Structure formats: C-alpha cells, structure tokens
Amino acid sequence: MTLSPEQDRFRKRMLNAWLFRTFLFFKIPLGWASGMKVLELNHDFATTTVAFRWLNQNPFRSMYFAVMAMAAELSTGAIALMAIEGIKPSVASIIVGMEGDFRKRATKRVKFTCSEAGRVFEAVERCMVSGESETVKLRTEGITTDGTVVAVFHFTWSFKQRMDKA
Image 1 (cartoon, rainbow, N blue to C red):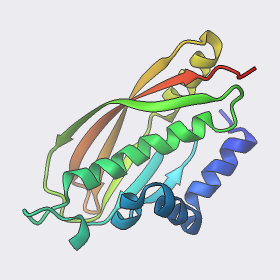
Image 2 (cartoon, rainbow, N blue to C red):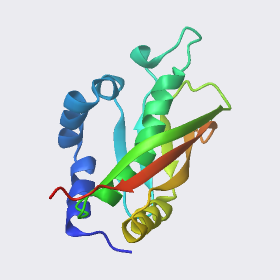
Image 3 (tube, helix red, strand yellow):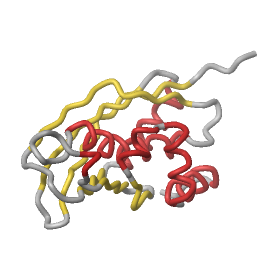
Image 4 (cartoon, helix red, strand yellow):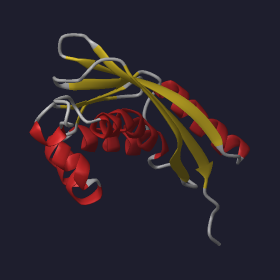
C-alpha cells in the first residue's frame, strides 16, 4: 500500500517535531504540556511516546493513567487522521470506545505502538465504497525503555463519509 501525496504530507507534518509541537499547543494543549511525541508513522504502524516526569505523575509516583491514554490514543489517532487525509468526499472520524488494561506502574518513558494501520485504511475504503459508517477496534501497547509492558489500550474508531454540500 502506498500513501497518497496528501497522506504523505500529513505524515511528514506529524513527524516534524516543531510542526507537531505547534499543532499540539493550539489543538491539544494538554498533549503539548505532557510532552507527547510521534516517533514513527507510516502505512503499517505508528509509535508515540511520553516521558514520566513531575507534570505527568499521579500521587503514587507513577505516570497518571490519563497521560498514558493520551499518548496511546495518539498512536491510533495519527493513523486514523492520515488515512482520511485528502479523501473526497471527506470522511469524519471519531472514537466511539476505549478500553485500558494497566499491567505495571509506569515510572519511565513509555512508547505506544499500534501496528494495525492496514485495518484503518481498509475500514476507510469500505466506508467510501458502501457509504455506511465503519468501525475498527485498534490495539496499542505501551512499553517502557526496559521492555516492560505497562499498558494495553483498545480504541474503537468510527469512520463515516460526509455528504457533499450542494
């Protein structure tokens, strides 16, 4: 699978640290404050990261669950946004479900990787062909720098083709 020129431009903007931080500052200020980053984004997978630091901690001296959820969601959301970039007529996307399984305390930087990008592109394609909404449940796994799995999230995304305005 190859990305369209619009999707590739989107991918490059997400991977550009300065442009991504600017996007976060104006669109997701809590993401900006937490220090989230997109490390990798392509047609196969996305990897995001967030560091454990004073601002991201809970009273138990580990990473606050909502900070992990933001970074985890970004690993699936970056794929979803890339998949719908430049499609005509446009496609709307929204999260309709989330599940989190917290396995260990996160006291180090956590990387979230979603390796199910192909399923997103397929759902968007089905949506475009059928005109009906499509949902896809994506798994993303949070791993610390020492290889410990600290959390596994599942986000259910819904895609629906927008109607042309006449």
